Length: 301
Image (cartoon, rainbow, N blue to C red; front, side):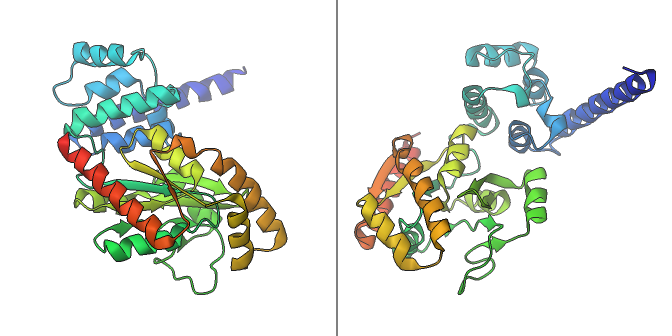
């Protein structure tokens, strides 16, 4: 490496270490939120946070010293020299759950509210069933996703989606403003803005997330406590008929969506519950009952 490049690299290293020192100070002073920093680090949207080692990260929490931090990490099977961004999927999940317990002493990571993730293949009728669920339980909140796809006729900004450009979506990802996000059907991006969900759960509300399989997996892997419900069609043929009848996609798009649906249907075993949408009102009633059962179990802990 030429001498000039070595000097530049050394200067960058010093700057990063200084930035990490500032980040740790903010954590210790309560200026930065531990879960937000952890999520930014593990989603690799914050290079400074990603390179922070897990032990000093834990020691930023009041009343946790070196011995206690190492005991926690030993119990989780994580080396004290590991970085937040270098944790494996299972380690991320275990570490986040432990962090939630340390910070709040509660199972729900965001607040006292209940988070319900509802996913399923394209054209299964998620939006229709969720509308029926909210008709039965108006107090339930529905998270509004951000998307880069074009608005369809009748859709309203802020009600159906937040319609954003690709550049705006990039900025949301970089700033850690999304709870989850994914490229859907190989084209458009969708994501769940974190802020509204956090506020609603802190207020003790039940929040419904209508997302795709990729997003549901991200929520699961992050260690966030939620009820995961898979909405399934009565049959694959029924799914094909629904997709063709709604007429919102051209033939090429329908083929892409059906190919994705095959993968999504095979993943239903990853969810806590499966509800078949044959009759909308029945499916909605089933989901309401599952949520009530989940809330009762939450209250027992």
